Length: 404
Image (cartoon, rainbow, N blue to C red; front, side, top):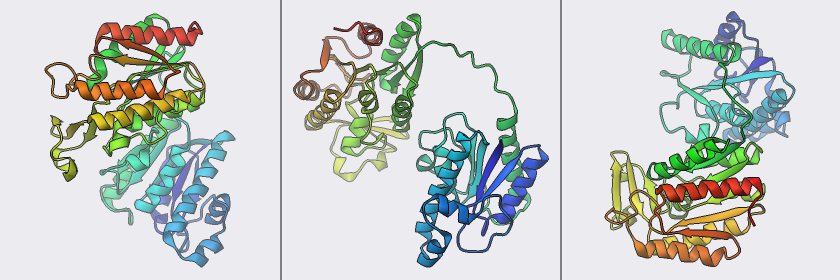
């Protein structure tokens, strides 16, 4: 077992060598992989760049012939991904560590995202203090800001590299604390701030029934992480209360989970109870991030960094049709729960997003697009305890195979 250290050794060889030395001083076996292409390696790797490109289905000679940096980075990322996955499957990999700028971060994190949760992943990057969603995705990737550019070993970079080595050594050598894990079946639930009360009530019901509940924040990566776990076969059921990410995907908000959202449970024939939590809103960041074409829309400043936009009746009609079609295609037991009194904490009488016309458009579209899906319509608000309990009990029923 060894930490696989990924670096472009034509530009980051000195720094990679220092990192490898620090790891070995800490008693950690290290496999150095060269993901560079153009210049000569500054140090000798354990896995050469030739092997990396062969793993990607091409050759170093072909990359040099093309002379295109973007293509080389893409293939290096694919080769690195395949190599670390194969090493993990053989039981030879204890963690992945990488360092670099934009190219190195792209390559290193592509390999990291291909590994299961729990495998230590640490990326030392010049980009770590900015927007890193495209690098982290929905996996447990640690991003460490390099502070200075990764160019030579100096008093700052030496400190950062030392911290990274110690962090990785700790992750791969120290025993995990007892998790308290049991053999209770796992259930996933989706939540947003405006549906928190619903999920809290439902979780209590599920836990009392003997289930362990994993709650995913519906912020794009949360929905993606849940869909990934479903496809991994880790769950017994899904309580998809909060499908707001589909509104962002439809309208162009900041928290889309992509077009595959709300498909995994249906494809895997997994029991699912689905509702329309927070579909009354599309999410943007600070007020100045709202596109100009939405200036006249109903906006709500959730805080200094989050601005919510009320979905219109027309958008709700499209959204209801979209959700309904996904549910109608499900291969497993599926129930749609509709809270007729409101779909979020700010969608009810006296609140800024209260819009009976928009709710009606959403519900009518769902009825028309999923006529054969079992549907429960309750007069309660989504955050009412009665609605939450009904959703939880219905999912328990589906998981027990008791539904008619």
